Amino acid sequence: MRRRSFVGGLAAVVGSAAVASPAAAVTPRWSALPMPAAGADPWASQIAARGPREAWATGSALAGDGTRLPFLYRWDGTAWSRDTTFPGPDVPGWLRDVEFVGDEVWFFRSRDGAGEILRRSAQGWSTVPLPQTLWYYQDFTAAQGAAWVVGEDDTGMKVLHYDGSGWTTQPNPDGVLFIAGVTARTATDAWARADLSDGGDIILHWDGTAWRDAQVPLPPDSNVHKLLLEPDNRITIGGWQRVGEESRAFVMTFNGRTWRTTYPPLGEIYLERMARGPDGALWVPVISDRAFQSKYARVDGRRVTFSYGPERTNAIEVKAQELATVGSSLMSFGTAEIYGSKPNLMSERLGG
Image (cartoon, rainbow, N blue to C red):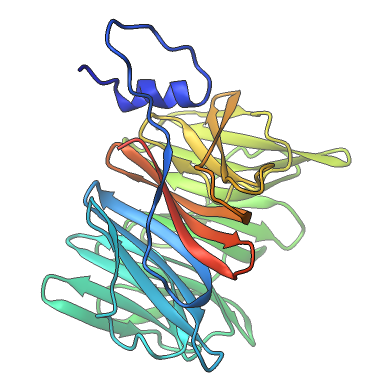
């Protein structure tokens, strides 16, 4: 039997017309993926994938004494399994951001309030402690030969830079009050959004020497939620623009030469969880209008269509919080609260 491609099936899921064929076509759907228990009241942080046989999911859950402990899950192409081999799985704190650096996987971790980078290689685990403890850890990103941690202490915003051998504190550009959403391709090509002290957002670029205004033509009165660094020097930015008393979503794309802005009809949706699907469209988990199913928006230019996750019996809320492309599949990670119980970890997959 001839199967449809993921791209064609994905379009069918969200309402595009299917072409009839002599053999029955298989239409990919969202399906539930079992996840081993993490503990009470889990918080889902991030899912990231290197390919169809390697994805990681992070977060924290309550222990019996009321402290929060980090958890880590690995997807091997077939199933999720819990990984407890990292240093200090029973030390209070959380695991959050995931970055693939060469053959290694790097995780940002808060351990008893102190920040550190966990690195997993074929030889095992190692750690890179931060040079100081911050009040709040906003963002982490890493590339070959570099890493950045953005946070705040009693003196204000801090951008900590790791060059493979040690840490330095990078000065904030003039007029910048707050930096977030840091992401990097290389040690000399990193991007972030910044709030200005006089209001408004700008996009910053690190060129190996300094953080500078990248002169991105953002819509006026706008806030940036997400930057995606994509292949072939493409960049995608998602956010919303204030228009009168309301806000509308916008998506900006850079093809290596020029920026193009579209306004998909999404309303005041927050685009921080936006991800590029294997079908080429942007996908965003949204608040569902069905208590027992998750909901996802597929954004292709100005065209927006929706699909729902599998039905979960007696669910009060199914909350997909993170998305990642895993080979030819789109995978989500979050929590599901079933009637009579606290939230449980959930994962769903489209295609595959």
